[in-house]
Image (cartoon, rainbow, N blue to C red; front, side):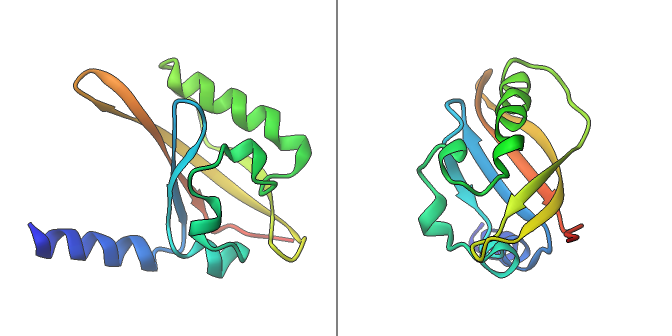
Length: 121
């Protein structure tokens, strides 16, 4: 089991996408290490906080992102969404996000996101 976990950790850390999860109150529970390489943020500075308070999304995209997340939490399936992300240096980058619910024992625990590295200025 340990080898498999290490392999997943390596995949998680070298993926070009940013992988992250939020709980049912939209608090960031995990984020891949490459968020620092792509957007300039350290994972430890993001985890544990509601994503709408992180200032990592463009202000005009926050409400839509929250609504999309709540729709997934309520059981709806959504197509990929494009959001504007704000880098630590203040640049705006575009990324396409996909999300799936993580259900354990019949209860939704988290929403897992993958934001594709389609970053463009």
